Image (cartoon, rainbow, N blue to C red; front, top):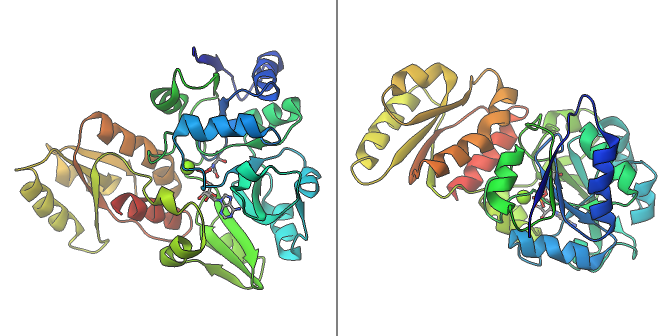
Length: 336
Ligand code: TXA
Ligand code: MG
């Protein structure tokens, strides 16, 4: 299959071009598109055959459910029932935006989307290219991140092309994604709001506006939830996390020095430590004081290490405040 790459300027959206991509969706094809978090690989969520192609293209296990993307608030009621008032509140405050809600599903949602669960994950993206595409297509769009299963999520169209060229119909290139890590996933059950995956909306933002919020531990998630597979947002290399303490640089230098006798080594570093790693294969994701910038570069840097053939990455740890929790969650998963 030849993959068509369509460039879209998010500041001056060409609706004619988006219409061509929307047509591919309504005809049962696969379209990768930018969102504010990462690129998604979309198919018409109401067409089980189209959705099946997503699993095939990504080599994703059939029991890892997908997120359904919508562009109008009403659509949530067409897809889900018995919505918790706290969920309504989060929608009101954070949609459109990087927040996914797990809700009781209606029969209309095909089983393949939710992999047989009685819940469905729904989110309304804020990226204008995604929003317009969804509006023109006029159908809800099921979309996981547009990477091959187990690889870091794509934050540029080039990342999508690297993984899926020749396998999917269209890549909409809307430039680099704004946030760089995936949406926050929240489930309502047992009288609490459970954060199953930290992401673009911080835990602090959520606890500030609703009660009974609990961040699920990585163990609880493994036990209770699907998506347990994507425990590695993994680069090909092994990732070793170095604690964030005053000895961080020394430890990193020692370990990297030892490992480099046997392996191709990379160091994932804070900007303020770059000078200590001169002459080594270090890549900076950003200053520790700007976690938003760090989130934006994280997956790109992991992919760059892969391209260099790095076998072991020593990764400095970051603060877990705000979006830092999402960064550390992804690094821990990559570390396995
Ligand atoms: O930012 C994002 O969320 C991106 C963009 C494209 O929207 N999408 C994304 O999708 O990261 P994916 O498939 O890579 O991750 C979806 C996560 C998985 O961990 C999956 O297990 C979980 O959401 N999930 C989906 N439906 C679920 C459900 N019914 N119950 C529990 N978890 C669910
Ligand atoms: Mg994913």
